[in-house]
Length: 471
Image (cartoon, rainbow, N blue to C red; front, side, top):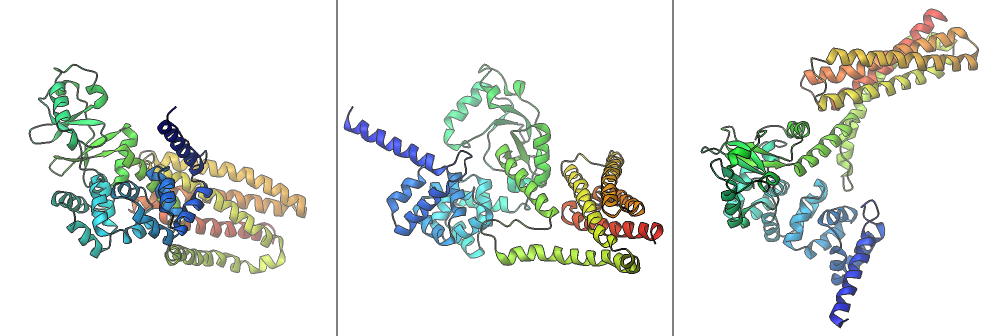
């Protein structure tokens, strides 16, 4: 074996060792690898740093940036060429990307944006401060600058922002052979990855689509119009959540985007939709708890601003709820057991309400709940609440009797649990439906309403029934 072959084998073995070191079995970055990168930055060891980075996929480099301190990220940026930077920027968390963009020279950033798909490029430009955005846009070719400006003119979280302007289209009178020959001739202008060829009429309106897999299965003389499939057109102003719903419902890989006149202006692909679904799911989960995303570089002041208002609102609702306790002070003083049992009844109602609320918000988001089946879903949740209340109330009543040996107290707490879980189910399913009908996001404020209802009616049920039966 020659010396050159030995050297190549050594390099391959080193690369494989680095790949094994970089990622755990679950594809998460290994903490030791992150430490090695930080050490190389501290030592200024450029060769070692590039060796470590070469073992990572761009998505892993983006993940790495999140684990590094702001200072280490600033030192790492000059070691990234525009092509690598272009692949990384689209993968970064928004907070980290904003920090990275501050330290990338405008000329380098302009080159990196030129390497990106138009949708990703627009997202990056949108994150820039006004002064730097002007510098970067001025350094870009006029055609690229115009494309980004057009994309940014669309509303946020719409199909126009989500789409990429690179797509493949062909006139409906072409044959398969004509299409293939044209695409080979214009290969440099084709998108890096595409799934469908959109067939357009003379006014450039899409009339169908030919999947690439179908194009390769038929003869060259076959007209595109003969093998094209119907398309689900998406208008540029459609909300991205609606776009995700269409993709999920019709199992789409890509879809054409049209302007108000019906002309083809772009396409949306499934990789963009995966990100939308993930973002919308995270947004709903966080909204249910009344918080914003506290990412790895989240600002403390920002976190406080997102959480404190909801805690203050919750404080007010709880203050209203405990007025029930104040109204029954004399009864509580006569029977201390009521003070011990009140938190249990309230907590059970809160958990039951959260269960119903979560199901309702998900059903509304996925369009499984509408006016046609709303009453059936409400009835189902109320039945579940009544059954669960009876089962849990029976268990708590037995436990109360074994502890205090008072059958009337056991009856009070059992009935209170049944009533509160029924109210919890009612609030959990009705509150998001009503808020949605009013045009409000049901994930944002439903939890406060349900918590108030379960606490208020939990206290009222237990103390009210106790006042009637025990005192």
